[in-house]
Length: 120
Image (tube, rainbow, N blue to C red; front, side, top):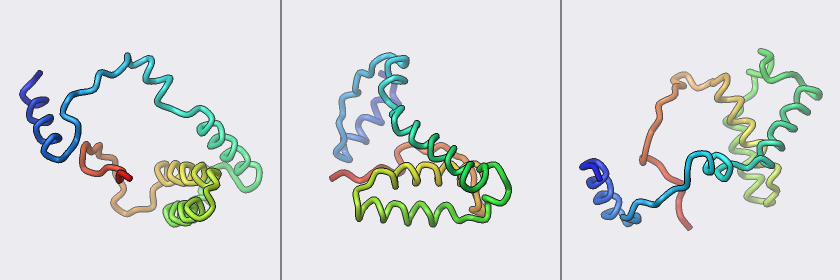
């Protein structure tokens, strides 16, 4: 164990997280288990239908939409109804915003351990 791993373990333990590092399966196995092909297929199908109904997402006219506002709306709809179709829309809106961000300071910077999904 490196010094960094030891310190990280100590800090995580002080925050109430598990102290023992988990043994993970090989990367090839993780690639098969840590994804939902069904969800991905729904996303792709929805984008293809969007191309037929409206326009291809790479066309400039699509960038007039507020995808972040759309994400918030679809999350609310999911919370109200439980319809997972809305989650596919959330993912696609996030993809579209990622490809052509509207945020004036949009950037990519990987962050670790700064923000987590709340526990129940």
